[in-house]
Image 1 (tube, rainbow, N blue to C red):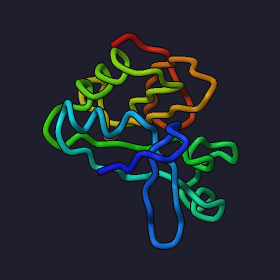
Image 2 (image 1 turned 60 degrees about the horizontal axis):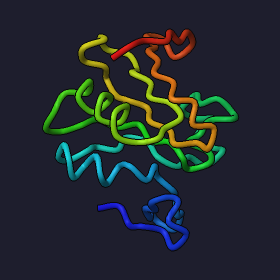
Image 3 (image 1 turned 45 degrees about the vertical axis):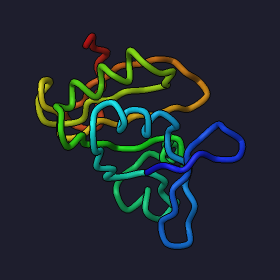
Image 4 (image 1 turned 180 degrees about the horizontal axis):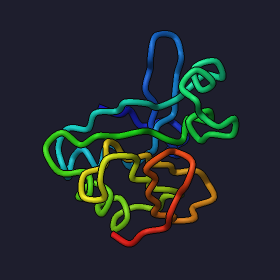
Length: 129
């Protein structure tokens, strides 16, 4: 369950003593599609460096999550995000186009509505779902 923040802008989770903001649409996505496994949310500077994240990662700001849906396919989740909420990026990462290993979802205020795919974490291609 994701808790609504008082400011109404982001949902928050608590991991140990670190409070992290997760994209506000994760709870509605969970309500619509079933359980979601969050493999990465907020990252400290040290953790971000350890996992090879870029210094300006949205994970550092707590506005991104790497998500694996439990009950539906990853493409179903990506399409749901694209069709139901304002977002900055949906990135299908690694795996195949029909079954990426996970989906990076960001609700950064830029709201570019980018849908991308990467096989190597370096090169990103714009795609249509």
